[in-house]
Picture 1 (spheres, rainbow, N blue to C red):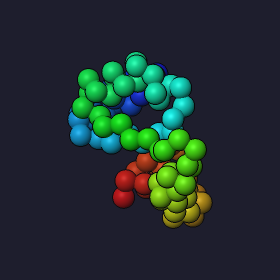
Picture 2: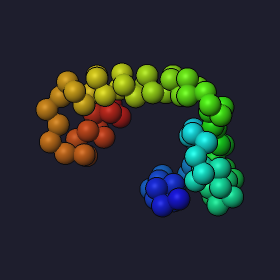
Picture 3: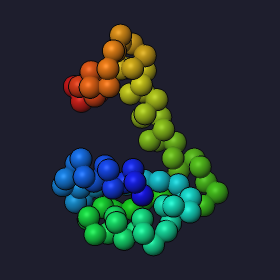
Length: 86
């Protein structure tokens, strides 16, 4: 919940975002659902027992890391964020 609230406070307007997660107890809790709903965030979850549902986004993150993090001499988080945004 702390990470979700921190992300919302930094982004400010999160209405319309889709947040994908597994079906862990935190992500299926009433509090999590209430935070998302009150901020206009659509909840997306993989089907129970089917981790392959997550493979498209996991593949995308792997590609992002290969094209940015592993191929650059990054010295700070801010530098990486700028590189990823570009």
